[in-house]
Length: 129
Image (cartoon, rainbow, N blue to C red):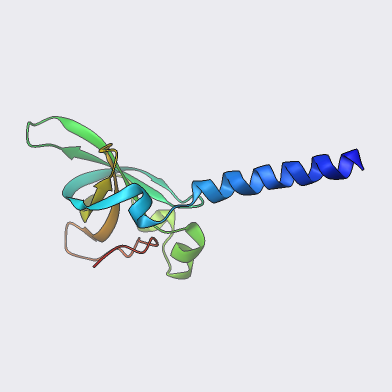
């Protein structure tokens, strides 16, 4: 009986941990903090629950910043034909999105495109239009 109770507690703990890792747009990002970024891809992470594109952005003061742009889950992206090869390291991206509420260098991308204007459908979180 003790083993069954312990197993149940472990399962509940794991489920609550994974549930807290997934979030709604408004929980982490704010429509009051729009960002318009242009940067060079330095890393692509197709990981659960949300994928990330890391881009090097030069800010208004000329300082390079490392931004993380959140996208959809790997499964949703794969179904749309997006793989790591779809977003090459060194590619230039234009990103319009919304910054994290805590004002860290994280954003959720609403509109993402390559420098030549080719759109990249990377979002999965329900982002306001």
